[in-house]
Amino acid sequence: MTAACGEAFKTQICLVDSDEKHRSAVKTALAPYYLIQDFANSHDALDWLRQHRPALVVMDEDVVPLSGLSLLEAFYRIPYARHGEGKTRPPVVCTGSRKGSPFLLRARELGADFLLLKPSNPSQIIHAISALVNRKLEESWERLPEEASDALLLSADLFDILSDMV
Image 1: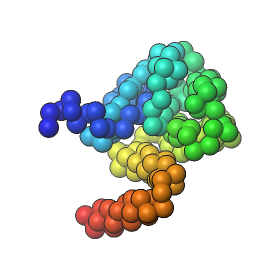
Image 2: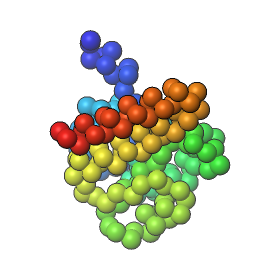
Image 3: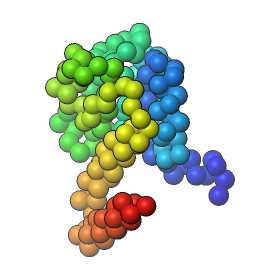
């Protein structure tokens, strides 16, 4: 299988962080598992998000030129990301540099799915994002016929057990 072919099967994630070092570290941690579309500029990210629907969005509080809060509010105004869209809305992970930051508190109020303090180690990032992506995937299985849904859930449970053993 070629690298390009492998990329076609990866789940797409949008990463918005003006800090090049942190953005690069997150991208490096996630790239083996996900297709990452990353942005340093919040306007560019918002333009892209209006045209594409990633499986998950990671955004930092210190993005420019829009602030992290302005970007988050604008993202939630995109039709597919609105609250009330139920299980179809992509999860959002917000990052910040200090516990109790106004951005992280407001992000939680607005419906962010996970808050992560920077700097984060790669395993924290992978775990948080994988859990959210997998939860969304498993929720989509509920719309399948019962036998198919049960088989997928059982398979996922078995993989979880195996991964815990490794």
